[in-house]
Amino acid sequence: MDLELYMKIPQNKKILLAPLAGVSDVAFRIISQKYGADGAYTEMISIKGLYYNDEKTEKLGYIDKCEKNTNIQIFGSDPEIFEKVIKEKLNPRDDIKEININMGCPAPKITKNKEGSFLLTQPNLVKKILKTCVKSSNKKVTLKYRMGFEKNNLNYIEIGKIAQDAGISSLTLHARSRNQFYEGKADWSAIKKLKESVQIPVYANGDIFTVNDFIKCMEYTNADGCMIARGAMGNPFIFKQIKDYLNTGFFEETSFSNIIREIKNQYEISLKYKPERIVINQMRKHVSWYLKGLNGSSKIKNIINNLKSLDEIYKVLDSYEKYLERNVND
Image 1 (tube, rainbow, N blue to C red):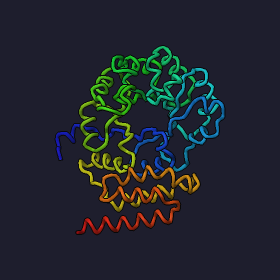
Image 2 (cartoon, one colour):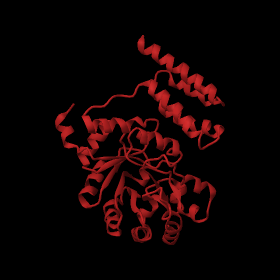
Image 3 (spheres, rainbow, N blue to C red):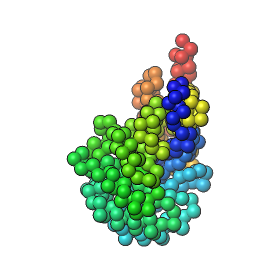
Image 4 (tube, rainbow, N blue to C red):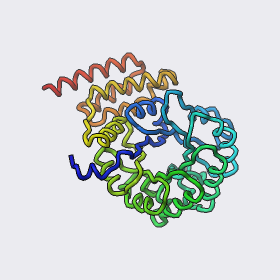
């Protein structure tokens, strides 16, 4: 252990699960919080969908009673709709303590509607939206955003100060521009600069895949914590590893038997909320992420992708666990 580096990083850093479309559903949020995530968020939810009472959108906003600290993330571009939805639908909810506003999504279908990261090109509208949200809400309002829409217009400091002045409680900066999508390296120097430029908490987002990444990011940026996105996909264990490091200076790698156990657990939790057919279909990507890098995992993923019953999938997973044990012992 690098004791000097360990002593530099305060234990009170918050580790959050990012809102991930098609990933951070109830089951995965529960598991991530079981492993130590300090908080989680629903998948990104359209404010228009809530406004027009869209059934699918409403379901995305469901938070189970057993979730310790899950909040909602919303996106949109019309201040009046934000105000109405917050006052009529979100304020009455006692299961959420925070409303996170998304101004970072790079998906073309979102930016074409002038939402998500597109809003970074409209600072005056950003100001109006954030002021409206804060004024309308009886909960704290936070912002997740990117460095800018294009590399030649990185206005994250300006947006951060606008947010702070509007009464936003904290900022999460994904240290990439919209045009980068998820390519290239996250520029942690932007997080460092933002932290030095505002007085409200700043959370780092981007390229935190391991405990070592977390250590380097926190030491360099002095952020108040991090929000883990792709690094948590198939790896909710990262939250426990980081927490163990913060508490003791040490952490352990997850055993493959625990990985198999958690895959089954996610199936079981998911079945409480969705039909088996849908769970099996949606879990395929999760299984692929969980098994990534394990010996012979490609063949197992292909087999599971073609199975249609949970009993068959469990048998394959049980056999695979025994195979892994034999290979380790050999």
